Length: 319
Length: 319
Image (cartoon, rainbow over all chains, first blue to last red; front, side):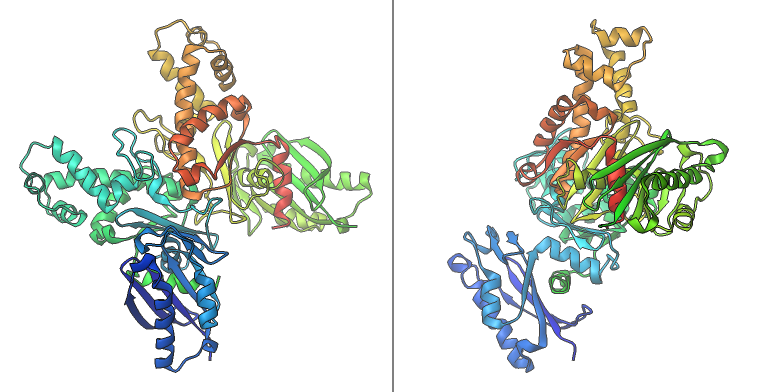
């Protein structure tokens, strides 16, 4: 029987696991809560115990597996198989994950950062259609990404290729970014960025849009609130939507002018706004790409949802 | 004896040839004039005759060569070995170059576009220091480029990866670009672009800078004029230099935020301005890159000059 692969998507809230075929089909899925207490020292032992337990249940042994792949937050050393500085896991010191997992389970282990792994997943089995050139952009609390070019995941000289959130897009009135510079895509196109834009334009807006009233009343306003109101034609929400589309459209256009990928796959929580989000971005993209790029690079929504992580993690084993 | 390689750099004025070792060292160099008469129909026969003549002179046969690599303007089909639409060669119809050269010389033939080939050359033996991740940008009449990532030359879904001249960088007062859109890097950072900027700022400038007098007197002003005057402290030339640096610096910063290459190598005629050009761009680059990119991506000047083409062309044989 062909050997299987284990994919692990390690996040600050939960650890997702899957057993997959070498074709990337999920046969089994489960998850556990991430225990970040005691400087995250329980995380790796919990992962090992959960896999051991699952293999027993399924009557499988290490011999049945080609390898384990994992996506992790923080600074990943994919050669050494270590992670450091994953603050949402409380990992402040170097974690020798590969060594611990391989010695406990006897299965070869591979690791990369979570955005890269999600990019691999969407490229392999999702909206990337297994093309050799795919860019994945995730719009969540921040903006992250991963790039596959000529079939290879890019890492860059300093390990930060595909960190698309720090492309400079706002020159006129740049917000400060957590990275220390100004005008980053993340400051205007993440969930937080949409709230930044909403506050900026609400201050200047004198009409009676619903979004304005929510802000003035101190209600919680999220990216979802803004997109839902924009879809309904709320005047202020549409102003925010147009600026968001402009910034994200320029970023996508310039990425495409550099890489000319088959697909730019947009995922993450903000992308739940769906086709409406894509339509605004596409318009700006079309205005800012030259014909050969415009006709060969497609903007698409991610379609694997939460499975992108475990599928992409599994694909690390096959690289 | 180890087999050798022939590298060919086909341009609108001359065809450059070299015989190289597999280590990329040039052993022999020569060139012929490009005869673009009769729809460029003499070009390939001239290339074949020149190689045959040179091999006779050197007492070499096709058996002594691993292959021939060539860089060409126009739209190159690297799989079929054809070129179409190279207007500076008068090639309006499909040119079956690989077929013609292989059947005449009996040596395997490889081809890619000229900017990609120059990128390969600078990466292999020049300022790219043979790093796995190198971006090459050429500032000439236009702005072109080529990208090597994880050791592979990128082509993209539509064959236009690395066409860096059409990144949008000018949002406030964009010039029209020949590509049909506005605000492209090429409109402000090529030799032509620097003249565009000079005319714009000369119109608004009321002082008595030398550059202003040259423009008002209808003298020919080139990128070299502008950089030379800027180095001497000419007030208008410095205004142009600062805007040029801003646009090119933003483009380099955003390329680095996407790809995080070890080097961005700047070449082409405009780069003759040297360290002075680099200093202006570096300042803007540093302001617009986050720390991990800023410390791992270097801006450097190309250092192979005219040899980049033949060296990169030769490297196609080894890919």
